[in-house]
Image (cartoon, rainbow, N blue to C red; front, side):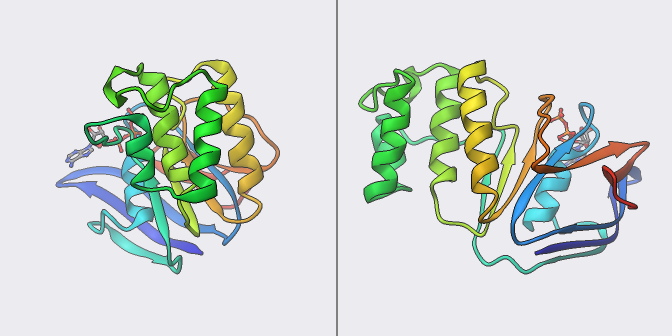
Length: 194
Ligand SMILES: Nc1ncnc2c1ncn2[C@@H]1O[C@H](COP(=O)(O)OP(=O)(O)OP(=O)(O)O)[C@@H](O)[C@H]1O
């Protein structure tokens, strides 16, 4: 569980946002939305525990945390090599089968793929890694609609068993998620009294 209590974020003298009160339960899907530059990535880093420079309290009781950053890092080598550094056995096989279903050859050099193809590889690498909470920073920005529908569906189903927090620009409407949004430098939960 993550609990945010009376948090304020500044960059030096510049006030970025405030979040009065917000709770991320052990299971469930949370979608963070807001205009460019409002602070979505910064907030995600704070929830993850990478950015600790803020006023207020963020309590994070999750044990295993995994993050997909906006610009994932790949090692020189094939798609398969990059996946096999994180995934083994059945999970690796499942990831490979998904790539093949979207016509991506796992033996190709990772850097020969398009941005969208790389984004799918990066998503699968973190999605199948073991975690109690998964942070996804714009996992869909370069994806075509078929792949996007596929990963959104997998995320929705998987969030029944763990906490998944997603930053997205996409108008992803789902009744299975709690929506968190930025308004006038305040972070609020849709339908919630934040
Ligand atoms: N280390 C930093 N020092 C100063 N300002 C920063 C720093 N990191 C981010 N910012 C500023 O804080 C604001 C919020 O950035 P952030 O990347 O969190 O926004 P975002 O909502 O994720 O944006 P986008 O939708 O474009 O990805 C931006 O104006 C950015 O320039």
